Amino acid sequence: MPRPRMHSDDRILDAARDQWISGGDAATTASGISKASGAPVGSLYHRFGSRAVLLAHLWTRTVHRFQQGLLDAAENSAPGMERACAAARWPVEFSLLQHADARLLLLTRRSELLDEHTLPEELRQRLDRINEPVAALVRRLATEIFGRPTPERCELVTVAVIDLPYGVVRRHLGASTLQPSHRTLVSDAAYAILQPASAASGGNATGNTSGGH
Image (cartoon, rainbow, N blue to C red; front, side, top):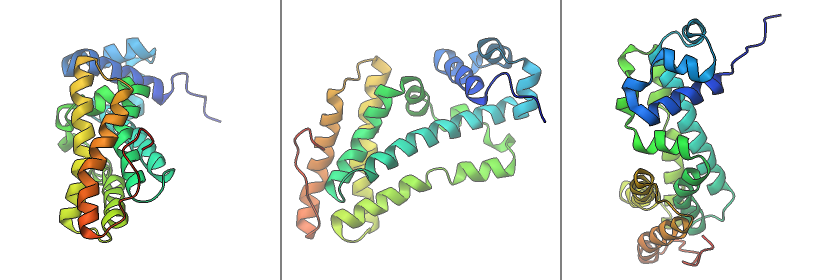
């Protein structure tokens, strides 16, 4: 039987994440990750093959963590407007619960972290498909709220439940001023964007703007 790993992938990726958010690309070195995680430098290269692959695994782990919470929040809400408002709240909730992951995901451009042309083909393909679950959720919300997921309605849902809360979170993460009250703020804003359009289309604009979204 193979010997159990002394240093888990998550411990190594946590170290890389913390190096990145504290000092960016220049600070995220193999030696720094090794020192912070306790894993020998040789072990990092044996396990991941290269620094670029290690950072790609860090990015995909972070995105999947965010997406899983987003999909769970949506799934545990009533169809239509309630689900949309739950989705709008999740970026705030994620940032409050998983601050370091949120800083990596929402304050770092993917192109800053990843040197994608150096990655194996299979990993590049995974990255190309990484946002498919969110796109599917947007189409689902547009169908529930408006009856049909036209490009224009999907764009409206994207603005309300993705662009708006992401923008709020990015601004406050950078200033360390994000508060639990921002959950209600982004939820109410999403409702205010979607409800009039839903009513005009004869769609399913259920819910209200109390903190219950």
